[in-house]
Length: 246
Image (cartoon, rainbow, N blue to C red; front, side, top):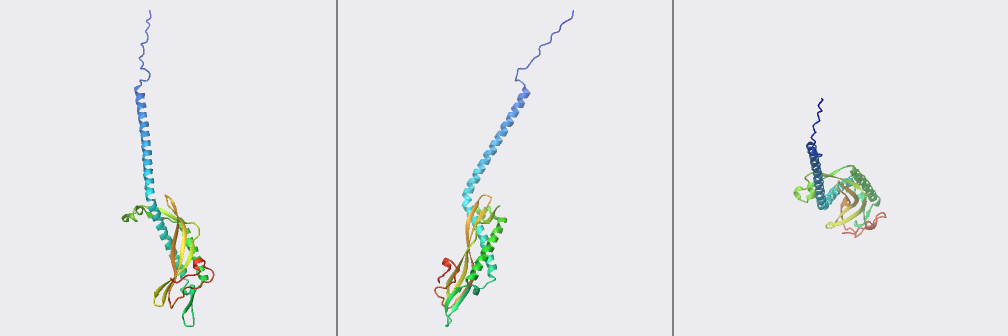
């Protein structure tokens, strides 16, 4: 008689008791949690750094405006002085001023050559405008130590680039000044006030400033009594038309 062998019952682990799979899952969850913590930490660091930077910029902003403005003004003053010297090499005091005397050799009138004055004003303004236009493509550098306001650190540290760009046309005003220079002598100085509106651009902000400078066109010592006023031909405006002895 054939024997019938029954299969032994297989032993099965309860569902969810796969130890290897559980370990892998736990490891995966731990890695995910670690990554989340890293991301949160990085975001927190970024936010804190941004807030510190923002507050720092608010503190140094007035100093930055002042330093950037001083740098821009120094640049425009140098440009105006260089151009004025270049233009005035073509003229002398006598090309701008004519002194009229009477039969007794006394000064009776000091007359301004309006044509030459206007030519000088226009030439200086035009050349200066072009020079400042050229600054748009050049970077000027400000040392970060200058923003601290501490003398020891001025001009030191990493540099921040700035650019200067003109806003509108340059304005000029002719000024004639008389001052006593001794017995029977008067010092006469002819100046040009220059006003230019510029934008000062940096990685942080743009500052708009009106920069003013003054250049000396000509000067002379006049021997003799100078009349209290002198006559100008038509061509000058407002306060330029009559200059009183100081």
